[in-house]
Length: 492
Image 1 (spheres, rainbow, N blue to C red):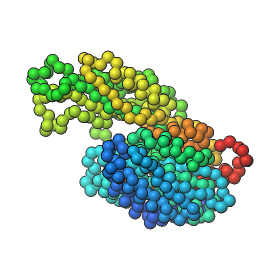
Image 2: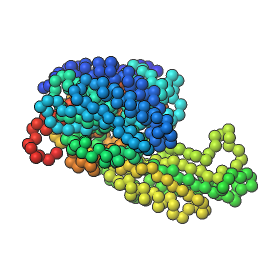
Image 3: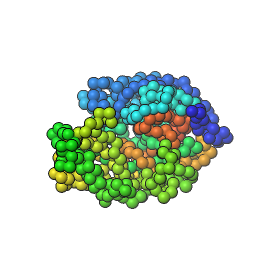
Image 4: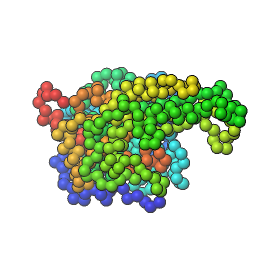
């Protein structure tokens, strides 16, 4: 495989220095931080199989989430940031949460909250030769390994941004970095953590989420919306034990056929259209900016016809169309073990992506009603839902936030940022939107073409991580300037 060149070459070589500290200086310092301080610890993090609780029922006894939290806590405490504290919160039965608090520099005011997560998806299939989910490998500007881009890099980018500002003598507000450990399971523990923290977070002037993506590596990208997610297991049982298919075939209906009938209640099998009206919503935010060119690249087989009439239509579909995917199956033996037996049950794990404005709890009720009503052939049907995750659509950004993000993209790449509606889910943003209405929420990240979050061969594009680090620094810097300009008593 050719060595990947990353986005370094795309960064503008003649970017204009900022009012506080030159762009060239910040870029060089960010590169030194990542190469010298960040990557060695990120490598160690990548070796830890800290799977999210939904993928490791023994997560507490295994201790991998606690190990990852401890590693990141230790690295945080070693940062050259005056007054920084790093605490791991949690209790029995609850995943850990790392809370890093960097007080404002002298004379500055304001409060910025930065979000990331440390839990990981499972390996999912075979990685290519020479790679493994927990055996990090660097090839050029790519660091391969599960969790490197989703979302292990986030803490490192956030704290490196603080170090860049402090090292350049740029005033900044208080920055709190929150890193949870159940995001890939729908963030079931996050509400309790937020409740227990009470006033410790304060009311932020800005929230920055570093768990999103980018359509290209030639600019910064701002996320305008995120889909919600509804995950469930649907089980159909027809027998108490397997029986000879020659005896029962034609008499006992097969559990797989009945499961298909149930899934057809949710989805048109010919078109893939979700049939439940409660799961649909009209777009209210842009799916992608006009600056995007070209289709996303997926590792499709030759000749596959993609859904959607055009690249633009596919971006809208990815951001605002409900869709069902079967992500796992139980009750079906491997090919070599499949004898002539009519199996007693079939269980499917389904993932329903929901438009950003659809209430996930109401969607759950609609799906549950559709699946449990009038069981086909009187079979035993069971449905179990994980924590529903409602999507998020960004309100218009304050001018100062938009200006800071635009400035960062132009400094780094010589071009304005793009905006995109993401197809994934970050439950934290919907929760924070409800908790702090009116507070600007910026979602951005490193997950670009080919980075393959959740799939095999996940990688972090290191230059993009450095660029996101600098963008975070510019947003934090702007929050201090906006706080200084705001009159006492002004609303956020």
